[in-house]
Image (tube, rainbow, N blue to C red; front, side):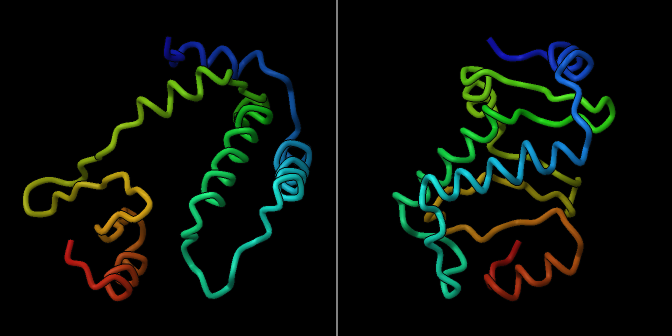
Amino acid sequence: MPVSFLDILERAAAGEAVKKESWDFDHVMIPVRTLVEERSLVKGSKDEVVCTDDALIDTIFEAGFELALKSGAYCISTGRNIKFTKDELLEGMARVPQTLSMGEGKDERVLFARNPEDTRGPRSSGPATLAYQLRRTFSSPW
């Protein structure tokens, strides 16, 4: 069963109290460093902008999932940790929309989830400078 918005609000009000500085260090930096060391994730190459090693991609995903499961999410407004179960995280990922329509008429663009080896160029909803750079890099009309 998916987590409701009200469930998340309740967790944001009742979760473990954590100071922002402590969150950054104890729930993000230290666990990431530990996962990188445990899973030997320091394998990247400066010449390879996008990782193409399927086994490494899977390991990185698994490490990120483990981090989300152990650390939860920090609510800045309440200073609380919002925790999720493995099933809740999996359900949430399964329900993520694969497309998002932005704008209208001639300005409408559809953002889409890209997969490894996707031949479609990336789309951006960020600053115009980023969109310009993506166009130059991928020579892809939007």
